[in-house]
Image (tube, rainbow, N blue to C red; front, side):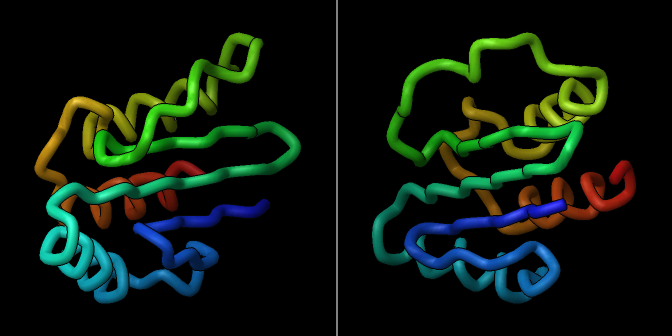
Length: 105
């Protein structure tokens, strides 16, 4: 399984992105730009998701198929913690999503 997190221009495998890195990247982005773009890409045999926070440029619609049960659970977690509606994203919200994601995977 491949899980990548990108905050602004910095991208890491999720295993290398500890909570301190996530929080500092978000803080730096907020200081420099105001808006924060967080993207998470999850790819495995059963999962193919690209998640984007509100600070990211819009890239169009979905992948052309209905999400499976596991993808739906991940999408619900994203909405709960990060979502596209949250304009002022904090590092704690992203860290909470990452921890919840790791529990269900």
